[in-house]
Amino acid sequence: MLDCILSAAELSQDDIVIEIGPGLGILTKSLVERAGKVIAIELDSRLVSILKKRLSSSSNIKIVHADILKVTPEQLLGNDLATFKLVRGYKVVANLPYYITSPVLRHFLEASLKPSMMVIMVQSEVGEAIAAIPGKMSLLSVRTQLYSKPTIVARVPAKSFYPPPKVNSLVLRLDVYSHLPIGISDVTDFLDTVSCGFSSPRKQLRNSLAQALGMPPDQVALLLGRAGVEARRRAETLSLEEWSKVWKVFAPLRKESRC
Image (cartoon, rainbow, N blue to C red; front, side):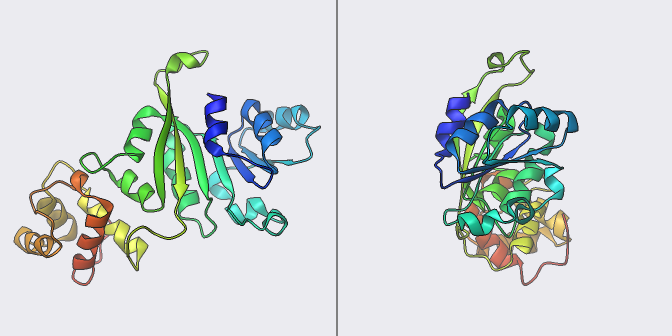
């Protein structure tokens, strides 16, 4: 599992790596050996003490006692921004619990200083949702794929750990785009429109959008037709490009709404 993560991250001495939740430092030690600089963020003060003792001989690691969601990438990188110049951007490596996966992805992918790559181990169900294709899309997959290209690197069965957890995991690589893959001028408004579409995912798109936006279903169907999207489709079937067309049609007309 460690070799899989390290291989996917494609590390060199030119890389800065932000590791989230290093725990006892098993992966951290290998990251330190391969990267130019490792910034490890740990919330548990007891583990921070252990990490500092175990990695005291390494000069290229900074251990930070903090909540990752309360510190920005700029704050974490500090002077390393100038030292490494971040020509390729920094990389993020993490083993993410289910409850924090989406917030962490948003924290980095929507940051002003984005990573070039994220390699994360997540619960299988969550990883599948992130990497979904049209037909199985969700708000999480649209939000993530707006900023990055997800690739499932490996599947990790529960028996790979001791004691084994109740769920399987997978290693996911996110290659972050330097520019958005679709032409939208207002990311917040675009994602709000998508959120409205997924507000009632079991309903046809015309009905879920009508309910969320406070518009008559017939008007919604007409607008969807202008976007080239069949009104009876469900939100999960739309591609990123189709969502951009829907947003461009609805943006000038829809009421202010946060779905």
